[in-house]
Image (cartoon, one colour):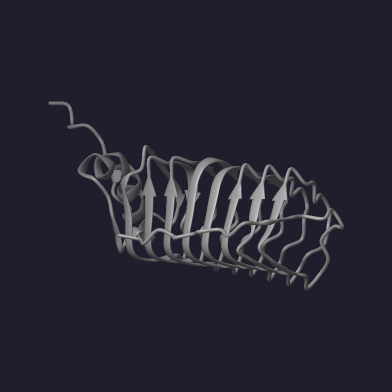
Length: 217
């Protein structure tokens, strides 16, 4: 069972609207309804911060660090979070498309609600991460390492697990499980009996077993 983050934000200081910049340092700041489209905040640090209703289209946050933060109702297309670090973070009702999290490290992160299309988590490390009530469409976990990760009431559509490694990954409460690739990488995951039946054709195809009806007499 993955531990959930315990985020208790202090009284936040309102964002002053000056914009983001590389290697910025933000502590106890509340960002509300701000549009950061196209801004460069690579290598920035966010501690005890809250984001509400912010726009992150093409925002560069590569190698940024988020610690004890809440991101609620954020949205973005092409947001760059490559090699970012998220620890004790809640992401609530987000809507992302093509978000880049390759090589990122997520530890004690809750992603609840919302919809994320084309999520790139290639080569990422996920430890004690919970996905709850969200839709992940064509998420790419290729080469990722998942440890104590829970998917609950989620829709996983055309998800890719090629070369991923799993330890204590719980898929039993997934509402929709559609594995596009890397079916063999589910070793280390637990599924329900009904899910096993649904996945049987993919497992059979992977090991080269043909499934046909009985021969005619």
